Amino acid sequence: MEIRTYPDPILKTPAEPVKNVDGQLQGLIDDMIEIMYAAPGIGLAANQVGELKRVIVFDLEPGEAGSKPGVLINPEIVLGGDEILREEACLSVVDYSAEVARKTEAIVKGLDRHGNPLTIEAKDLLLAICLQHETDHINGVLFIDRISSLKRGLYKKRLKKILKGK
Image (tube, rainbow, N blue to C red):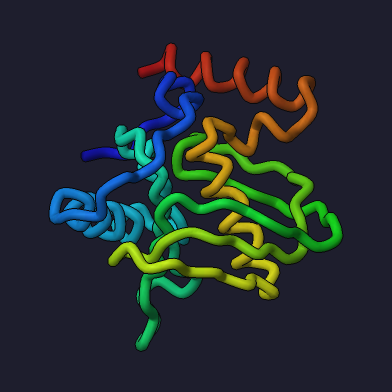
């Protein structure tokens, strides 16, 4: 498994809801956590590793003592706070960051890794942004879809030069 990068079409494909929380899904979750830490990143969605399943993993303090990765299956954002512009980057969008408008808080419902109902009230700004960013991924939306067409065009042009040089 490897992290897929833009313009891979799987990144723009909405993921399917998870129906069974089984051993295969647990293996996917473990692999995703390992890949997220190795990248390193603070969040990863299943379609970023080529799996069209509504699963995200996250850890705002990777490598910190006592830090524990979070897992959400079939996440759905049900409420957000005020809007703020914050710099974002992404493991699937090579060498680029931009300011993106996000909600300052988020309430996200889904299932934990064992299939139990879970509600996360993300009042911490970084957690709220991370959950919105990863939930966007499983909906087939990248952070560059949330910036101006001019900035997105400039990124695409730069990416073509990078890919041409390989």
